[in-house]
Amino acid sequence: MNRKQQEKLGDLLLDVAKYIITAVLLATWFDDVSNWSRSSYLVPMGAVILTAFAGISLYDHTDQVVEEKKKRKKKK
Image (cartoon, rainbow, N blue to C red):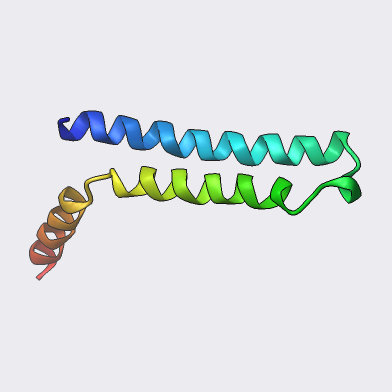
């Protein structure tokens, strides 16, 4: 998988994490939260953490670091 595809997959995973958060928030508005078990909270939180971590890890930050170093050298 090339870098561009990895970044697109990373974007997709971050979007999935946001959608999970949105779904849980909407569910709390339309349902009585006092009847929820712990797994109703822990499973979505775990899914958000895993998908967000996977999405962030797929980004290639080396380009940003190289550009920042170039900018610093130009300022000197």
